[in-house]
Image 1 (cartoon, rainbow, N blue to C red):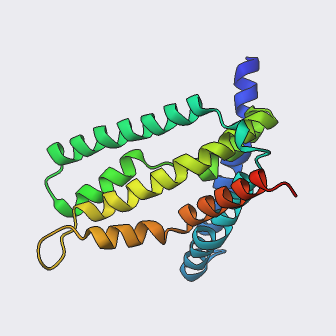
Image 2: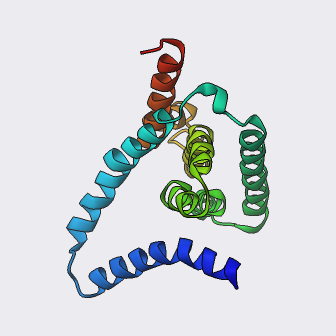
Image 3: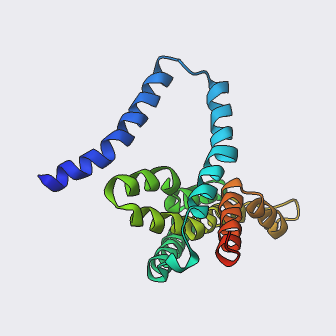
Length: 192
């Protein structure tokens, strides 16, 4: 029962926020334009800024637990490959393949993982999650862009690798994490 209450205390605040947002949408407190603008703001500004801050806030590059990072990256690749094989075998419509592949492995790690780590873990859990952001979010977003692009053909009937690459390097979440890593590395090597 203690474990259940502990988990409930961690998850309940997040669920209440989801339900509150659903309620506000249901009573039409927000219109579609506001939701669209808010989504754009969160994806292009707020979430990249949060990711930058979390990565930059890590005390030192020596805090990296490579076993956790390696396991997480390997698990993400395995899930991606299993989803890719499943999509290729079972989904006939090429327009649906990329969307379903992306949906199969992508998560809301940045939105849900950090609050859960704060509630369930200690300050060291926040460090691990923040460092994991530096690896998992760029990889996850890169794989998402590839997933959504790889089944789309250009006018010549080929996958446009250059377009995929440009989409990856312009992704705001990837930029936020990578800028955080650059500033963390600079701070680690040049003491202030």
